[in-house]
Image (cartoon, rainbow, N blue to C red):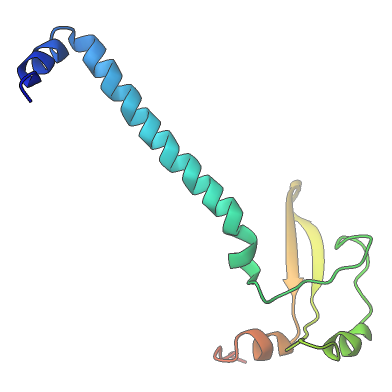
Length: 123
């Protein structure tokens, strides 16, 4: 601490250099915080959206083609470790302009019984 007055005097000898140094340190911490937020968001995106205990089964050709046969629900439900099975359909379309594409997911009533039994559906 005996050289503190020399450090303090040197800091204000060239004010532009001091300001630019402080700004660069501030930008470095800001970038670190933002990039760490993006990294953690991507790392946990699949786990928080669907949960670790859920699995989505789609046909080989992808979700945009045909759906799985409805008769497979019983076979999937009989597999060990399966607590509930639900069927969903996707409708792809546009709204007012071909650029405005939308995806609508339709669930039967059993969706609410399996995933959110506490939710009351108003009829």
